[in-house]
Image (cartoon, rainbow over all chains, first blue to last red):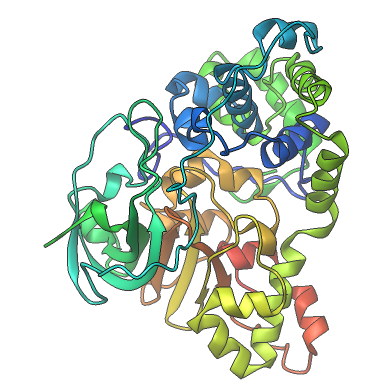
Length: 216
Length: 230
């Protein structure tokens, strides 16, 4: 989806502020949020859970920008917990589980679910290293991993990374679990992406699923 | 904190920001950035309570074991960090066969040191040379190789870094105090899929006589992201 998370190339955010000797977590709750997201039971095991990234990206831009990284992570986890019916608003308000509340039965992922990660599947590759490709214009409301700044731009494939499941969702936050594709590393010149005023020796590399690309 | 190369302590920065907020009317414009850079400044006061509530409710439902959370926090605060990536770099500097394997198949070579894991399952190592300087970013999210570098610093997750690294890498590097010559090629790696990137910095001059352990001690996190050289 075209929203504020897709920041590459934007102006106006000012200088990069570096904190010296930064702690891993600034507040105890940040560590709890991070660990919760990694640890808790339903993560990705149920269809109703949907995509972490899509929920993150659906945060309205003005809220996204005013939230810290771990606030966003907490928001996503809270949303998932509520949307799946694992917890209720009242339980969160009271800070304790309601013994009367019955959790809905959640639907496990189908057998064809590929999850994420390298799949080791043998699928014919449409492109090979050295090939010139163009990133497609994809402007749906789903989650995808094709930044706006490369759409429509021409680049060179430098590596085929093997086969990975496409992580895109549809608008309803459902994923195409059975869509394994080659993922290629594509090199774009800064001049192609940003115009002639940019530096001739700057190059940007992105890892792109095959369905994001067409021959150029 | 450093802003435009000026380094000041965090406490002083926060104090300065508070004074500035009272005096300057453009605070709203900078709020978003401040929220990210000094992240607990604008956090609603009840977030710690809301986090606690979710953790408690899940625990009471037997969906969560709080000691498992303690373990994760301890891991990332104390055991997983840039010291791991530094071991990879130091080994590559002293062992040319390992370096060749590392650049050919980062995942396998880092796996030899048992340093793969969550958000570091598929590793690509890119080498800085006299001709090429590499820089890692994630514009869409804040993807980062956790097993080798730990959790990312706040600046890596900031809107400013995510927005600017791909369009003006030289200006970004200059802000970190690094001037890259016009003849040097800059390669920016935007971690959009599941590969995670680690920069292999150049071995500094004067480090010829150091052993692997000593070398690991001089490798910094920033040099493995690409915003610093050694």
